[in-house]
Image (tube, rainbow, N blue to C red; front, side, top):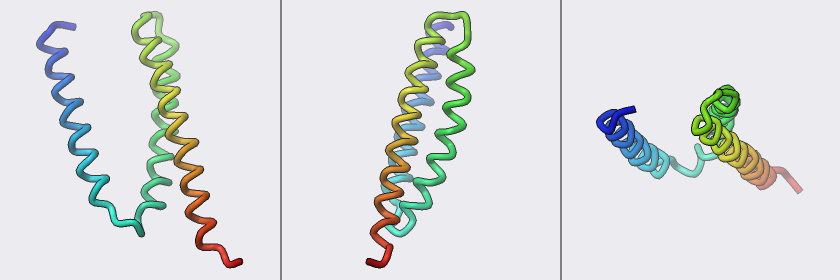
Length: 93
């Protein structure tokens, strides 16, 4: 990968982080639980892609794939924990 391609990839990553932050910060609290459930589904897809990347013969791809699996699993487990906690708030005692 040349320096120019790396710079463009980094630029796209920074823009994605900024847009993602802006979109998520505008979500009202009533939509947070359904959004979290959707995010968990997307993270499940990310885990599948990361597992495929981890099986590559390139060492750097394998390391990035392993990191992606770890971060996606943290996101899924945390998302389900938050969703479960929020749903318990609406149960009658």
